[in-house]
Length: 100
Image (cartoon, rainbow, N blue to C red; front, side, top):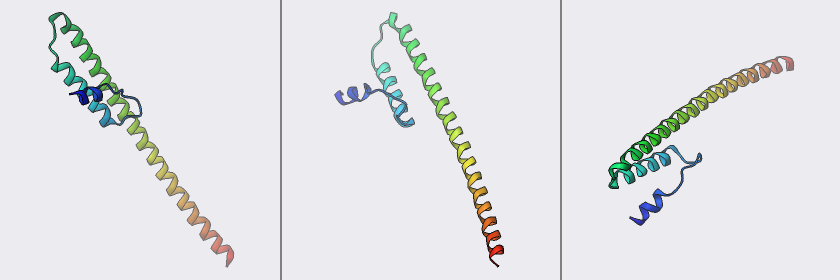
């Protein structure tokens, strides 16, 4: 149990992977669900769970946005690579013609 407590107290940063974030999220949910709750604290618990869920959704949106931008950048790079290859081929052909 001590190992899981130590693991649950680690902080999530922007350098964590998506899997690390999901693991931390699931650990927090488990901690919250495992503890008995007094009736007056149920509202606070529900608010916290709501905030955690909102943050999870925000993280998912951010990861999807970053993935989309990375895909766009990759497409742009492939396009530039193809253009450079075509230009190189054209220059080599022109050089070969001039050499003759």
